[in-house]
Amino acid sequence: MRLLVVDDDVLLCGFVREVLQEEGYAVDVAHDAASGRSMALTYDYDGIVMDFVLPDATGVDVVRELRRRGHPVPVLMLTARGGSDDQILGLDAGADDYLPKPFEVGVLKARVRALVRRAGASRGEALEVGDVAVDRLTRTVVAAGTRLRLTPKEFSLLEHFLLRPGRIVSRTELLEKVWDIQFDPGSNVVDVHVARLRAKLLRARSRARIETVRGAGFLLSADGALTRPL
Image (cartoon, rainbow, N blue to C red):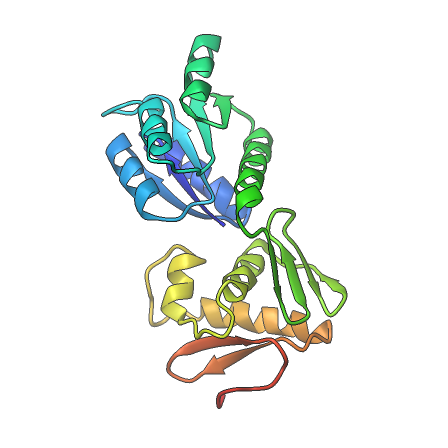
């Protein structure tokens, strides 16, 4: 799942991004209202973590515009202004939740989990291809009747494949969408994680296979029948 964090405090924004990435989310950041508004309207996010006070507008202004345009993305408002009037203002503008600063990391994680559950109510939280089933909200994976224990990055990798069944996914796309980094021709991080994910599917006796398509990337095969030469 992909989140957007909008906060003009660069250090705090980076910290929140790191915390959420450790939870397995892909995270984009913006440091002002204009950038946050543009990204929210351009890309498909599962949730937004929005600062109340931004240098060029307020988070409330951004949320109001999103709701005026009919955008349903759930929003968690972060702010050092903990007064009830500000909370009411944010919630009435269309924010789904409100978290005063400073906050505990565990509370932030729990609030974001609740936030993406709201997104899942209107989006596909359950993914199933062949004998592999994924619950995107509880982050559980079952393959051939066996519960798989995946790292956050392995889960995000499998999720990306399941959202694109029958489609070749390039290493560049995986680096940008799952790792949030630009393509590095010398990096083997994708191949290492794909190999680990393959091994776990094999141990579970799943018929699903992740094929390597030479010169192109990877392809998820649901029934174990290789469709292209390795």
